[in-house]
Image 1: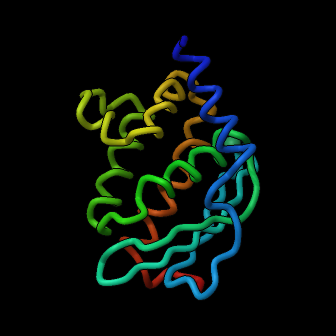
Image 2: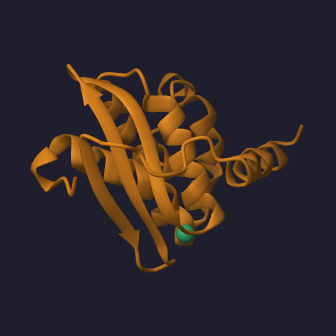
Length: 147
Ligand code: ZN
């Protein structure tokens, strides 16, 4: 399958059948992330216990790339430590900006690596990184939580 087609199908799949969209009961951390240039607006909700991310959900709306990206991110970070999730966010943002290109880092992103092509679409970079940025922000600054 052609890479562009694969990328489109993964994005479509996460838009049509989001796994982590909705409202969480009693989240530990809540942070809204907004990308005004596109209109993407998400509220990220996390359950964190003993430094492990136990659950992730998001609410809100936005373009296909922003929504697919946050849904994939949730898949990737559930079960990970806070430190690993923050590191993955760094790799993802680096990949989207075209700064991280080594195979190992990109493979570790699993499905989210499908968004690598966004690196060639400057207008969509903020859409793709919104969920990851929001996650990194709330893990590094839990005092900003709106829960
Ligand atoms: Zn967008």
